Image 1: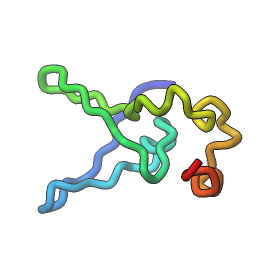
Image 2: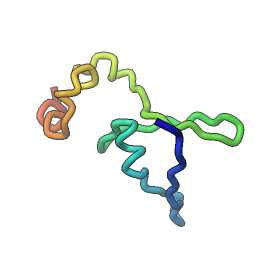
Image 3: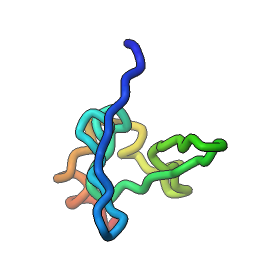
Image 4: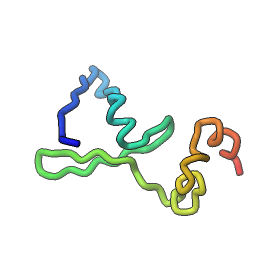
Length: 76
């Protein structure tokens, strides 16, 4: 798969929508945190790895990673 550019606009409140192909590529869901790595004039956007991800069974087993599962098991 080749590289291609996807753009989005910045609002007056410095907000933007992450385009769907980017969300899909990073497997982002509501509540995920993002990490920004600045390299000169480039920024690398990745899904943030949280310390809690290490012991998170939902991170390991993608079949348990739906929004319904997160709600059902969120308070355990």
